[in-house]
Image (cartoon, rainbow, N blue to C red; front, side, top):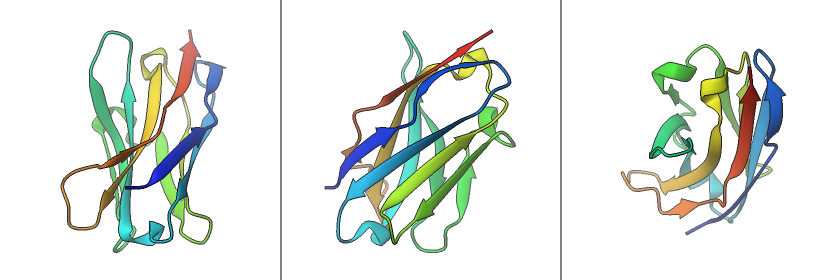
Length: 119
């Protein structure tokens, strides 16, 4: 497992931007697929974005396509989520997660960071 710590959440007006960052304590960070998930009040946790370890390929949930960008820096053990044109429905706690390459299971999760978008 990997220890993950998120930062960068906050309050922003609709149409604004935020950048979330997640730092991993691991000597094998580059061997993990890294994802972002979110959980809105009263709802379950849902997938937001993924960046693969093997080829850096990116995947996004439909509601955030064209607005969010996931990136990683293996030298710094970080994965970022740039969020543009934010909407009130993006309000949620955002979690960073890691899964070993070739696995379908995310076995490491951060503590979450709150993002609130006001209308």
